[in-house]
Length: 401
Image 1 (tube, rainbow, N blue to C red):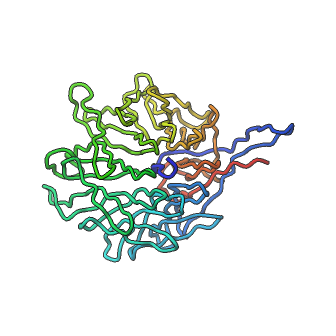
Image 2 (cartoon, rainbow, N blue to C red; image 1 turned 135 degrees about the horizontal axis):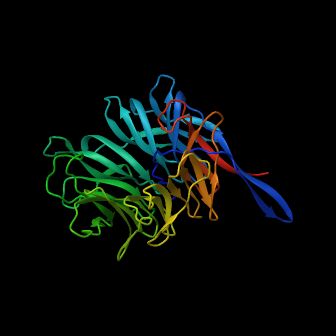
Image 3 (cartoon, rainbow, N blue to C red; image 1 turned 45 degrees about the vertical axis):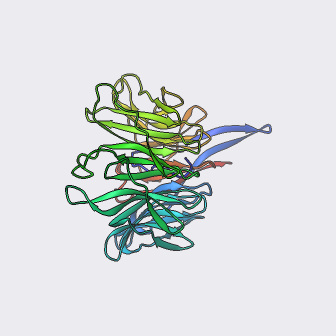
């Protein structure tokens, strides 16, 4: 998926690594150069996504301590402002430079927004008070969740998935239950996420037995593969979809185990963990149906993994990176993967891991998104917590000297 890097916080940092690249009888040194994107006047910033033009969106504190969404391009960080309230947060950017996320309004309610042509537009709600936009395709179709007028048994507003286009927000509905949320969209307008198919529950935090679902052509389709032996209670959600209509599905089971699937028309392929691993999950997939994420190994250490088919490939760890664990966050259509290993951010290409480096004086970094032009977005910090003061959004770019 080009734009929908699900945008996760982990740990990582790096030391620049040079690789020899030969061509035309001469040798050029290729090295990853890290650029500090700065802040909007505050002490912290985080990148969440990057497009094919190298534009980066994220969130930064301002001089007065509030958080605003930003757009970084050509060396400049632009404050996207708010819908009249104190804070805003960017979630995604498409190939046309349109940005979506959520912002406080003047009343203090959080509303989904679309930013384009220098202006932030309020996308409204489904009759309730809050909404949030999580992804946008190149056609300008926006998806997310919004509160409705209806309330659940606990008295809290019910949340439904929405599709916004041509100035209107449409309720995508559920699988017969009360709640739903949309998490990703492709260029065909296929939307995936989670739908409630259970009887009335007591709220999103308790009892929401969501099922992975697909909205297409005005219909909602249950992607949940069904009981996994013994009828174990579980919750599933589809976190990404590619242009072929394949969806990555994660399952959380109430006995503490997890599972994952690659869904395609005609059935699901159950993904395997690393040998004897009990917990694993997916984070992203590309147009070739390659899936990346995390799996425990036989020692119950978390490792970054790649699925090409059913079996998980252990991507290994960076030497001297301060930990025998990691996670893969994003993959592009060239098969390049980014994530973190121990306290270091990495890029995997051509079968090997590269340590990307950290900003001077920092000790941690994390790579969260990659485009198809050797540009990686993430963060660098003195702490493993991305919300720590001093964390800065960064861009890694491959330079050939």
